[in-house]
Length: 179
Image (cartoon, rainbow, N blue to C red; front, side):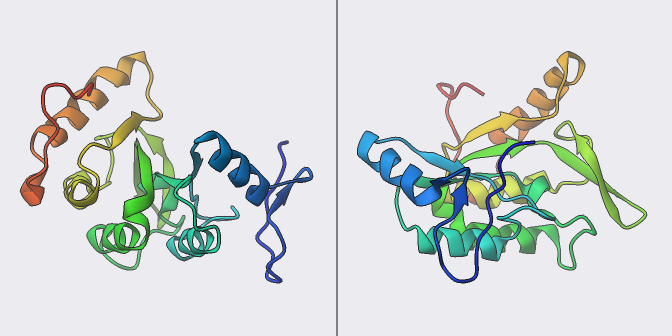
C-alpha cells in the first residue's frame, strides 16, 4: 500500500514518507515541472471541490495544477444538485488551474455511484461538462480512462463528437488537435 497524505488542521506541511508536497512543489518550480493533483470523493485527502480549492490557495503556485476527473469528484451517494451545477462550482473554483481531464463514466444504482465505465456509456452529462470546461480551457488534454481495446474506439468517437460540437462555448479545437 502506498503512502497516505493527510491535510492536518494545524497547517503543518502535507507529508508523505518524509517528503512534503511543499518540497515537491519547490522542486517543480525550480525545474519548470508541473504537479497535477486529482480530487477523489470519499476517504481521500483531497475529496471535494472545497478541499481542492483550499489546497490551491494554500500552495499558490502556477506549478500546482489540477487533473480534473468529474466522475471521481462526484460523491459515492450522488449529487444533491444537477451535474451542470456541480461542474459550474468546480470550474468556478479551479477551472483556470485544470491541466488535464479524465474522461470516463458512471451510473447511480440503488443510490450509490457504481463503477467506472467507458466515456459515453453512463450518466455523466458530457455536453454540459465540455461546454463549461471549454469556456476556460478550449485546448485541454482529455485522457480516456477505463477503456479496453473493445471500448476505446467507441469512447474516443464519443469524445470526438463532443469536441466537434461543444455547444455554445464558441471554442473548438481544430484539425491539429490529436483527439
